[in-house]
Structures are given as C-alpha cells and as structure tokens.
Length: 547
Image (tube, rainbow, N blue to C red; front, side):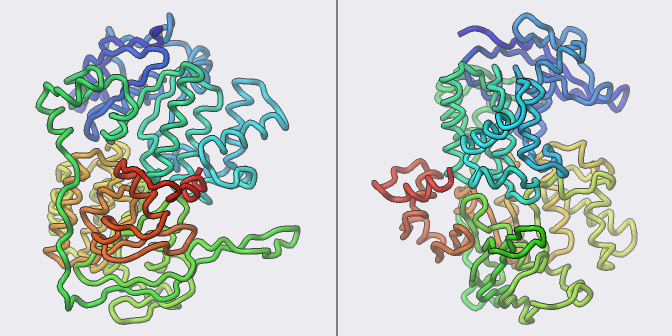
C-alpha cells in the first residue's frame, strides 16, 4: 500500500506563556492507501486536535505547531502551507466528517445546496448534474426520501439524519483520505452498520484511506487495520488491531478495553408514585403545499403513545433516527405542541400557559443530544450551571451558588476549578458532562436524557451510567432515557419502549424485551447492537427501510 500521509513529531499548543496547554505531544504515524487507522482514547486525549491539524483547521495563532512538526500529504508539506494549496486539499483530496453535525452545517441553507456546493467548487459541476449527484449521495448514506430532502434545512432533520448529510458531503468528491471524527455517534445501530459497510465499500472501490476517530471500540475492532491509542496528547501504544486487542501492552490500553457500561438498573419500589404519564400523545407536523401553503398531510412524529414513569424509575426509548424519540421527550416537557394527556406530579399540564408552567420547570429537566448547540458560547461553565439556580431563586448567595456549582461539576467528573472557562475550551465529551451538570443542579424529579452518552468515550460512558444510577438511588429521580446505544440502555432502563415512525413497536420490562424481543423490528435492532444473528426474514424489511 502506498503511503498517503506522514505525520512526524506533531505537537500542538494552545495559548502562550503560563496559560499554554500542550494538547498534542510528538505524535507520529503513517496512513497508507486503502488503510483504516483508528485514533482512540478518552475525551481530551488529543484525537480531534490531531485530525484538525492535518487539514490545518485549528484556530491559528491561538493554536500553534511546535518547530519540527511535519504533516506531509504525498510530497507536499501541509504545516505552514499557503492557503491556495490548502483550499485544493480540503474537501477534495482530504475530507472530514465532524463530530457535531448541527454546528457544522449552515442553518440558513438547504442541505442539498450545501452538499452541491462541494461539487461546484471542486468538480465544476452545475445544474441538473449537481442535483442528481446529491440525490445519489443521499441515497448512499441512507437518507430517506432523498429527493424531497433537498430543500430541507438542518433543523428539520433528526440528529442521525444530519450526520448522514455530513457523510454525504465528505464523500462527494471521492477523497483520497477521509477523516471521520466520531462518524456514527448520532446514528442508530442499524444505520451504523450500513454506514460502516458503505465506508468499507468505498475504500475497496476507490482505494480511499480512512482515519477513524472514535470512542467505540466495537467499531474499531470491525473497521480498523491499525490503531493508535492516545492519552494526554501522546500516542501511548500503536500496532495492528489484532495485536492491540489481543495483547495490549500499556495499562491505559488495557483499561480502555475493559471499560463498558456494567450492571443492571436498581428496580423501583412497587409502590413508587407516578411522576409523569401520557395518554394517546400525538405530535403531528403539517405538510404544506402550493402558493397558499395548504395543508395536504401530516408527518406523524409521535402517533398515539401511552407511557408512565415512576419515581426512581427509568424508561428507555430506543429506535432508529427519525422514529420520534426526541420529539416524544420534548412533548412530555411541553417544549413543543402536542395533543393528548400529559400528567406531571398528579396535574394535567396539557394546555397550561408558559407562566403557569414556569414553577414546574425546576422539577423537569432535559439533557439535549447536541451539547455544543445547547450551551451558550457567551457564558462560562459556572454561569451555565448557575443560570437555572438564578431563574428559580435557588442556591442562596453568590458564594453558596459557587459551592453548589463546584459540587455538581465534581459529581459529573469535571474539575470545579474549570467553572470560569467557556464551552469551546472543552472536548465534546466534557461539554456533555456540563449539560448533565446543568440539569442536576436543580435537583429535579424528572430528567429527560436525550443521547447523554453519545459523545462520550467508553470509560466515561461507564462512569456516567454509574453516576446516573447512583443519583437515581439517592434522590429517587425519574428518567426518560433516549438512546440508540442499547448497551447503555440495558444498564439503566427498567422499562423499554421501541419506536418506529412515531409508533410503539414493542414495550414492556426491559429485561424481557432484551432477552425475548417479540417483533422482527426489535430483533433486528438487538442483532445490530449485540452482533447477533438475525433469523431469516426477521427485520430485513425494517433494516432496509432505514437505508
């Protein structure tokens, strides 16, 4: 295999003087044509900074390379290269799928236009040829109703669908190297399998090299030819995938391989009171056509769902992207309009005005899927956590509030001394922990957790699962846990709801659904998550429908 990329003694430092932080230290590796190299490690280990350095996308001069750092693509040196050369490289020879699709897509432009722009700039394509190629790419990455999605804005798509658009954009020009920074983080298990197979097929067809950044060691085992394990900005171990998994030498590597969410949920008391219940809940979005925008139909995002969440109880909600999981959570918290019955702490809150709901907001909190998009970049971490305390008149004096913030940050595994820093100074996983801290600070009765571990590495996933379980036992919290990671759901959920196209496909005690799923769709989800064999015909149509 021909060497495409050579990284030698790469060191990246943020800031100057006493505030300088060395994020990457003397990193060296090679990437060959047709090879998949995985960079693995915990959040903040330097994986994404290394990837951004390759495309020279770091915020210079805030970030700078130490003398001797070298990144060569073919025969061309990229460190310090002129902007003209970098424009030719970015998006054409080297493409990147970023970790957070909502912040990477332009919120003002249709997704078809954004993907088409890549083809226009690098391939000189115009008109109908661009449209046809964009539709082809959308179909390749499993975006449903590709033709109808061309004019959709990013906020009109689910998290997983936005990630598929990012992958389509990166693959548009069939690059020599694809850098994939957590490419399947927001995707459900069946689409994960399809995307990974797609990437493998493209490698075989075009000889494309893949630099895969991920915290999912299951994906590494399936996809990677070789692995670099990073910790505190350094590569502590590298070798073939088989060697790393069978004979890890470094203690950090062994700890990573052993880390995964463990245990089972603590069953709630039989007489636990109901915190939240819903009956025949519906969220229908109108489809409008024509000059006068006449309603011609509805998208039934949530279609007649019943559920009950008790004190100290976790209801897990699983399903493919676009199945209505997040919409269900938003509707229960009265953050979007819905029809049907919503009862919280014995009160039917459906139809309540915002002013009447405000006192209850303290009791019901949400951790959103995209931590960067849900955290204000203008507020420090302390101010973000403190905001809810101020709104509800909690926490006492400023010093007392600082103490509450410090305790909460410590609970979610963050240094309380970092509360005066801003969200952009943290890794993706650290930002998710900030989001969890913001919800926990108010000591709510119900927390809706929308993919709270999707951006976290495996060791931190296990810590967060243990933390959520401990907090639930201590404070009798009720959780609605939305996730596509069935391993995490299995460790937390007492009850399970499986959704598809806004409807409940199967529900019941979590242990029963995991051990003996009754519908083909549920069996297909379980097979994709746990690498099981699916019985002939079981779930084939459902899996295909997600493609």
